[in-house]
Image (cartoon, rainbow over all chains, first blue to last red; front, side, top):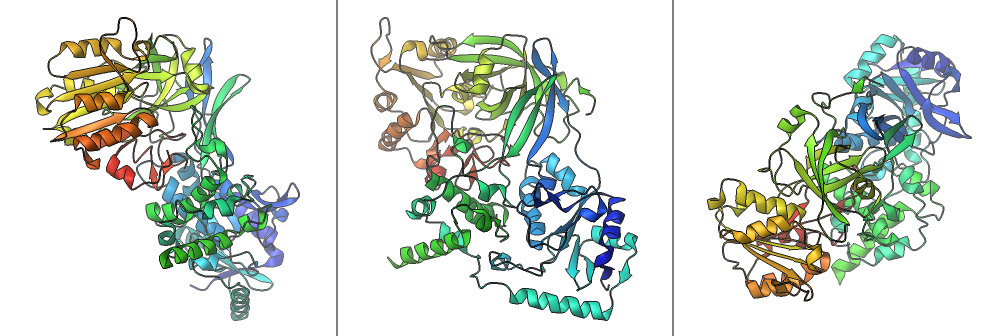
Length: 347
Length: 291
């Protein structure tokens, strides 16, 4: 089927149309930054952007989320109140292909296995993903190191492509096809298809050269005791920015809060970069220093996850590279891993 | 907000985070320093009680609503009906809150979680149980299960070595006394230093294990205790002829979800909560020392 199309100057009409059907999330200006948030007015959506500071994972996995509530009888909380799951139809518009692919990892961790995470699963099942192909990959982008690319449609329901003065929309999933059929947009014409192809070609030209990540899990196998981790972590401030801004980081904590008139159990994003993450009540900490925490971050993303669920815990969005206050670069770390492994094999 | 969750039965559906309501029936001080208490819990809902099915070695997440949730091994045996026992040392926020509760109070429980001791593998074999200090909770569950499960003749000789710093810190004193009366289990209690009135073994657990010298032939050993005790007991076991595949232990790591999602209790690629807590020494040898 030929792609559909709408003119860029019709964006707010398109957004309004989506808003009439679903609760819509898209890049909107919030607190002096562009962020994936619920769209309040159709004209606030910004699609002409490189990437957001925070990833769209917050739509399906909120930074802080209420899991259950408690009510009180006599002096203690002793009643459990269920919080309804978020099953309201939603869509995320304009996320980059790297971010769309990040949900595939969430699906493997939260949506599969012996236990299904029902909070995530309810949101995921009720959310359409309208990804926007990336015409301006940044120097920090490395999605192509994973065999992906700025026009990858994996993880999306609909892939949108820039075609100059219009966006082309193509269904990737059945859910996406059903929505496109309902929307009744115009079919894309030859000129726009041509323009989109040119922009796609130009986007691929902008990708920086990078070695493929594939196989890194085998390189990491023997590096648990390596001095490398101390070297890498030396300048790390343990601020956690890399993990909070990561579209695939999904580790969380669960805490109880007491409010006036009730209590609640919430889960919040947590970070392996923090000492408290693994601290026992006895005072013992199996990851006692930043070197062991850095090792965990790298091993989890590039050895344990591929081993356990078949996907890397990284999509190459480059947010950790852009936002690290001491310029630690995960690409450089992976290069060092390769070197370390090579020198180990030689010796 | 949905309707008040009056009774957990039938409402939990597929939500593994939703705790069942448990009523504290009985609280017992296990040690004379009063830092360790056993809590016997009853299900607030009959249907939960019927559905709950566990094996020795498994754990649960207990919660004091408004304070938080933490994992604890189940100290009672599936053969003990009508209650679930947890023996809890006062250490952090949740355990301190638990220690302040009284019978009749309601707490939350999720589980059973994790794997269990290798009960099938133990059939037809001698079982050696070695414990130190506070780490005897799931070992109690195991011993009671082996003795009272109606299949005592399925297992060979059962040898228990249990040590604590002093007599007052040995837990489950009634059980120990009852086991000593039986002729189908051999119990060796030991304390670190001589104490007035103490007539049993004196010395550290590894030394007593060496002296008692349980046979490694056709045997399975389970060792739980402080890391230093385990470290010094393992060479003794090797000397006695135990292979790494014959020795099991139970790990603890900080946990939140207990179901393999929250990402913190891993030892290398394995999660203590879903792949453990019980591991053989052969399995642990393949994993980094991250516990």
